[in-house]
Image (cartoon, rainbow, N blue to C red):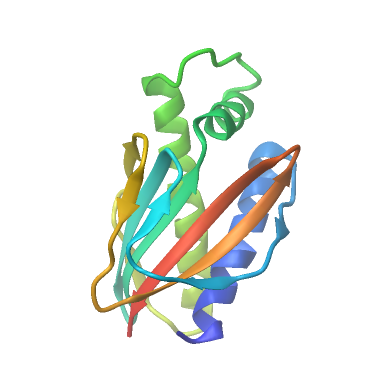
Length: 154
């Protein structure tokens, strides 16, 4: 997978997190994930079509998702990861991948995105076929992290 495809995901995610929660996440070591792999208990899935095809899975813990959703909703306390909080996290995924598509477009790479889907559960296992998955791990501080798993078929 070309680095020119991955860098926009890093750039967009750092910009969106900075804008939405006021924290620019630090990038940990990017690596290749072997399929099948486990995902955190909240996963936002967005499909990609166009010059590049595939999907992106943004995964995080429920606790991290609740903190982010609370910040997105003006600091409203989130006791339970309810419909409103799930909608906020799905929108976060939409913002990250939408901004990524915009960055790619400015570089001559046409990408359309699907509406986000949100999965929740313990022991989510992801199995990709015919695509390599690059994990972009982001550290939000305070022991919170988000993985952005990019699976692209050129």
